[in-house]
Length: 305
Image (cartoon, rainbow, N blue to C red; front, side, top):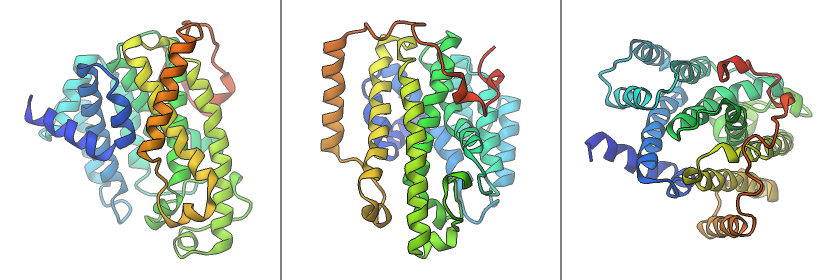
């Protein structure tokens, strides 16, 4: 095992507990590739999230150029470029991911759900599409469903992390989902009215996320059987985060919402029981048509030929 791979696997296991648990159901080589992809995304995301806003703009622009050049002296970036070559990941996906992080260096309020979906695509669906290549999914009919899972998971992230984001002077709840304006300062300082309003916005976002989760599930049949269960587990565990957010508003503002290990194990067991009961009868490739209205905000040429 190379030093970089060992670093990727240990970082993945330590920092992405929900994903790392789900991806344990992958074959060894696929798991290692996902860990390498995660470390790349994590490193860039950490740069984008650093305070003050814009402090790492030039560094992200430099990384973008390194991706275009196909070479880097940074071991994480260099390993990602090798992963890209090994699995034929389109450069456009990496650039869409980095470009969204560059834009996010100077946080702006999201006006509506379309802007939310575009942001979620940039930071999460791009990663899901990269994973399609890692998993050997070449049928482009699968890609819209992969996009939906990324959107659903990112919206769940945003709904869970409103306070954490506000403390970093970021607010991703679309204005159209709020009954009245809120501010990062007001949320961070505990303004009761603003927090109640933001929580209702989170509930509305989770409702939107559920629609994308449901659509994503219709595309599981495109996944190779060896990776399908891992993705189903990851999706179910992430959706459970949103379910817990919705159960208790008071606890929501006191601590970051996490799903207990016991609950995760129960959900995984339920999925395996469902698999034994239903088999693959509901996972026929091409059985379900993607709902076009879910991608009105997106340029689908970015992920389909």
